[in-house]
Length: 303
Length: 312
Image (cartoon, rainbow over all chains, first blue to last red; front, side):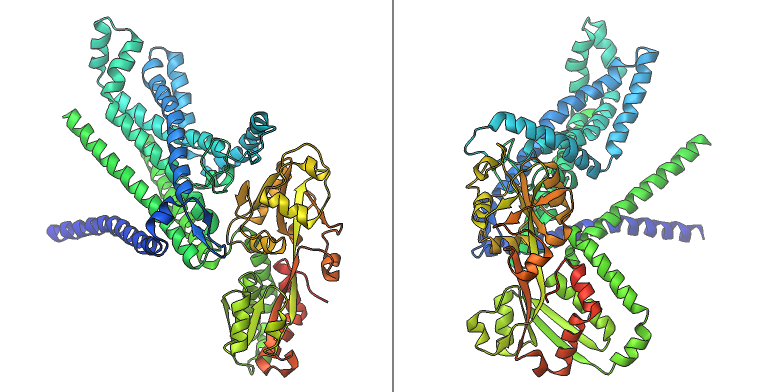
C-alpha cells in the first residue's frame, strides 16, 4: 500500500515538472514557427538591418534595425545607471549598517522600501514617468535644442525618460540578489582583511565584492532581462516613433512595437510583428544561457 | 505559529501573483485576437449594452424574425471594421437565422468583389468612382466619419488650412510662430501604423506615409491626454471623443462639428459607403432587411456608438 502511494506521488511530481518543460518547448516552437516566415518573405537583411518602418505604406518597408538598437541601447544604459546604484545600496545594507542599532533600523526600513519598489506594477512607473518625467524632459529638450533646425521636438517622450524609468525598475532585482550574495561572503574573510590592516572601504571593494562577484553578475543579468522585457512603462514614456536611439529622440522598443501595433495589424505586417517577438525571445534566451553559465561558474568557485 | 502564518501568507501571495500574471496574459491575447484596443473598448461596451437592451424584448422579436434566413456577404474597407462588427452583432441578434460575413480587403477590392458578383455589399470608406459606378454599383452612405485636429488649450492658433496641416505633419513647419502663433515648437502626435484613424487622416490630408511623427501612440485616449498635457502639441482623434481638455482646430475656417460634416464643408471627413448592385429597392429581401436595420433607431444607435455621424 505504502509503495503504491509512493509511486503515485512520484508520477504527480513528474507531471508537475513536465508542465513547465512542455510550456517552454511549446512557446519556443510557436515563436519560431510564427516568427520565421516573415524573415524569408521580407528577407532577413532587409528586415533586421532595414531602418525604415512603414508597414502600411503602398510599398511597405519592414526595417526593424532602429527598434532592435533602441532596445539594446536602452537596456545597456539603464543597466549602466542602475547597477552602480544597486550595488552600492546592497553594500550599504549588508556591511555598513550592522554596527549600530540605528544602522540596523535604517537597514530594515531600506530593505522594505526596496521590496516595495519591486512590487510596484510597471504601469505605475509608466504613469509617474508620463506625468513627472516627460514634462521635465521637455524643459530640458527646449533648453538644449531651441533654435535647432533639424531636431524634432518630442514633448519630452524620449529615450532618456525610458532609460531613467528602466534604471529605477531594475534596482530591486540588482539590490536583492547582490545583497544576498554579499551576505553569503564568509565573515572570516572580512575579519582577516581587517586584521591585516585594510580599511573598511578596502575590505568592501577588494575582498567582499570580488568574493560575491558571481552572485552580483547574476543580479546584473537578471536586471538586463527585466529591462529588456519591460513593455508597459516604456510604452507610456518613450514616445513610440521609430527613430535612431539618441537621448532626446522619441523611440520604440521591441516590446512596445508588439504592444502598440498588434491590435490592428494584418497580413505580412502581423507576421513581421511575430518576428519582432522572435528577436526579443532570442535576446531573452541568450540572457538566460549566460545566467546558467554564471551560476555554474559560481558553484565551481564555491566548491 | 507566527512562522506558519507568514508562510501561508507567502504562498497566498505567490498564488495570487501567478493568477494576476495569467489574467494579464489572457487580456493581451484577447485584444490581439478581437482587434479591440483601448479606444474601441468603450464603444464596444456601449454596443454590448445596446444589444443587451434589445435582448430583453428579443423573445417576441425573434419569433417574428426567424422566417428571414440566409447569408449576407460584405467585403471592403478595413476602416469600416468597427462599424461592421457592431452592426453584425446587433443584426444577428435580431435575426438569429441570418449569417452576415464580412471580409476587410480594402475599399477598391470590396467594390471589385461587388462588381464580380461574389458579395452582396461592397464596403468603401470613400465615394464611388465613376469607373466603378459603370458596373451598376450604387453607393449607399450609411455613416460619416469625422476627424478632429486638436491642440492644447494654451495654443492661440485656432484655424489652419489643410495645406499648413500637411506641412506640419510632414515636418516642413516646425514652430507655431510660422502659423501666426507663439514661439513654441510643434510636437507632432499621431497614431500607430494600422490604426484606422491614422489611415483616414493621412489619406484626407494627403500625407500618406510621409508623416514625421514625434510620438506614435496606440489609443485615442493617449492622444487626447498627451495633447492636453504637452505645450505646443498637435494631434488627431475621432470627432466624437473631443472634450474640453483640448481645442479642436477649425480647418480652412470651418469649425469641426457635426453640422459642418453633414453640410459637407469640414475637410477631414469621409463617407462610409455600403455599395450594392442597383438601388436598395432592387435587392433581395435579406439585403433590404440589412439596410432597414441600419436605418432603424437601433441601427443608428449602433452607428453613433462607434463614433460615427448619421447622414441625413
